[in-house]
Length: 313
Image (cartoon, rainbow, N blue to C red; front, side, top):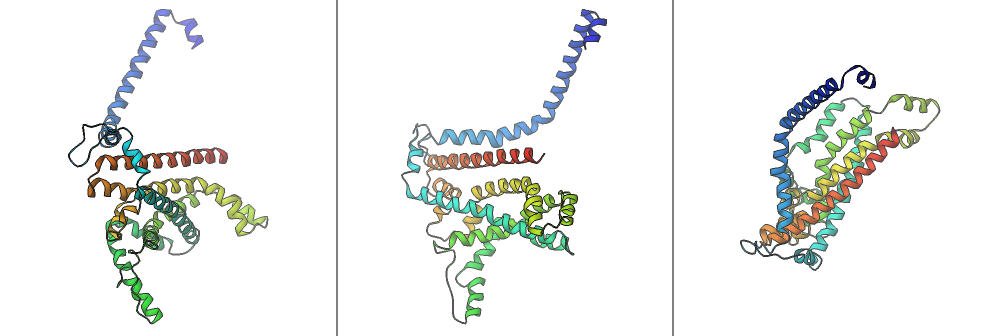
């Protein structure tokens, strides 16, 4: 540019800069035209409802009254005064941890088992099949598995030789575990596929070199496969965290008859207070807390993922 400035006159340089700005503005305008539909859709159907929900959480809106009355932080203070919220919060924590750890552990075991065996595609399809089903359909199916006279109790009765009619989804001690098993059954397929993709991207040369040097299978997994697979594991973890926090339909369908169903998770508690109890402003406050938790945990995991990727590079 310095050499060009020495040759061209100031007027020519000004005209060239003006032309560059016009071309840049034209490109920017075309880019905005392409992304405008997506920006409008996200603004109307995502950002606007979120902002509206936050505003409603500071009102006294209940059923069709109180929308114009400002409540301040009363709805948020009520969260910590109502025992149902603390119970649903604790249950959500258990649910999220299980939704992350169990699908990851089972999916990783399946991925390691399937990556070098025959009929891999057929087995992958079988394990992935539950993910294709709607959560409401899965919940209805497993509801009859856990029913007092359902499949599970029939198997236990046939095995033990004595009648067994335990209500798995009617007992506070087993309802969360029962739904978690169903969630793992449905979500382990997508976890396995993502981990298989991560395993396929790992170069074979370091593994073969380690085998030549006498490294055991455990040492190869710990020092080579796991560090290189960690970015994919973190992606799977972020997806499972979001799913664990926001899962509603599976819980609602399976445990619809559970007496304390509002305590199953924050998502169920939010729905119950908003639509069954008519406390829409209070339900909005629950939704704000739930959304903040999802964003915070996802942001922390994203930072960890970025640091891991930088360390690998």
